[in-house]
Image (cartoon, rainbow, N blue to C red; front, side):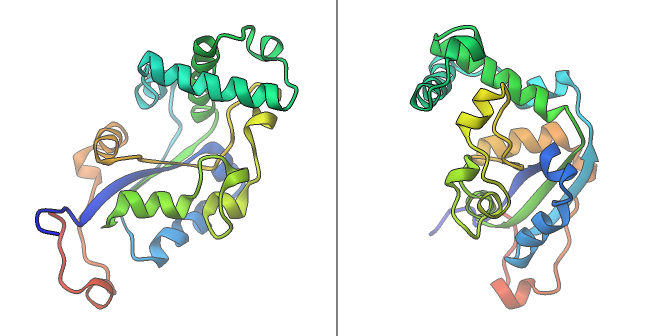
Length: 204
């Protein structure tokens, strides 16, 4: 389609659970095999200041939505939200979940990767699979390597361990790439199989 940006970039973080489990190589291989190109990669042990920038305070309605879904799931499985979160208020619960996410991202080393390719953002998320591993399709990274679920995570006062973070849209990808990488840490080159797989395309 005229004007459509075909070749884009997406930020991927292999979270501490993926690093500690030794899945970094397997995860990278999944992306490379479909033709996505690594243009930046490094291992980082983040701190809370950086985590707060990665998971910035969201709109109240967004936080309430997270809290309400968490509350509904807890009640569905007989988990007392007051015991876990100290409250049954969706806003309070949503803020707690966001804080768990920040605490987990700094709990160990993270492998940060910038991937470039045709519709990279959409394709990366398709390969990664559903945010909830227990609901992710077989063949996706989360579907093949985890069955963690919100009820288990809530009962143990932690976020769902889903191995990977992947940018959700172009604005998010741009913001996150700048947060995790300096411009000089990103590189442009041509893979040996690019012309065979895609013909003559370049990033716009």
